Length: 63
Image (cartoon, rainbow, N blue to C red; front, side):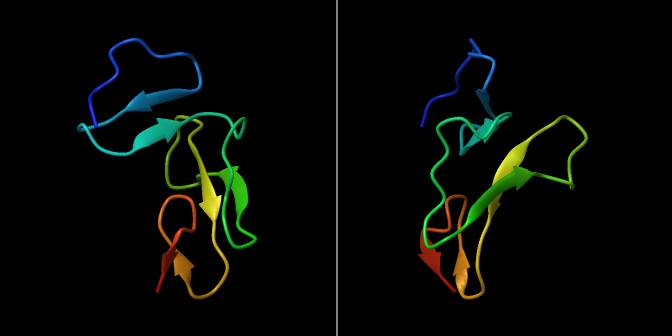
């Protein structure tokens, strides 16, 4: 994945890896996951809160 130097206001790329999202617009969490504000970061990032047994950014992985 390439680094996005021009943010669209919703996401940036950090360390050439997974995009960092700032709104839940367009995020589709799998397996009943819910998009929430990421309390680990103070810069308004969002993430999927996954159900038990699921992981990954979009809850796409089985744990």
